[in-house]
Length: 138
Image 1 (cartoon, rainbow, N blue to C red):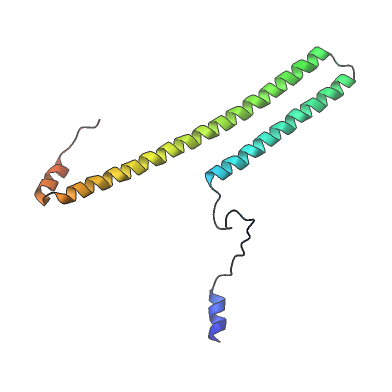
Image 2 (tube, rainbow, N blue to C red):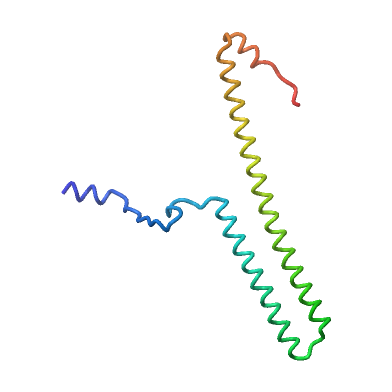
């Protein structure tokens, strides 16, 4: 009877597969999310350019003007390329900013740790004197 109670109180085991990159309870890393999103955006843009090429072939088969056709393809591919490049550039810049912010926060924590370690080595009255000072901002 006690085995049945223990089994009912435990959570079901989650099956893992060697093909799974993360467990079902973990979120993918920002880098993996960025790569997936970038792959999706680039794939969609390639499909859109392919659609433009097919459309232009149909347009030219119906006796369309070659100058209008080349202008349409040039403008379409330029707009798609610009939008994709801007999106990927902004995302990369955002990741760089986040990495710099994490580094600065880690350095701040390390500096505070060194400060408090140094203050611990001083006599209590000297430490209180140093902590009571107001330093002007840089």
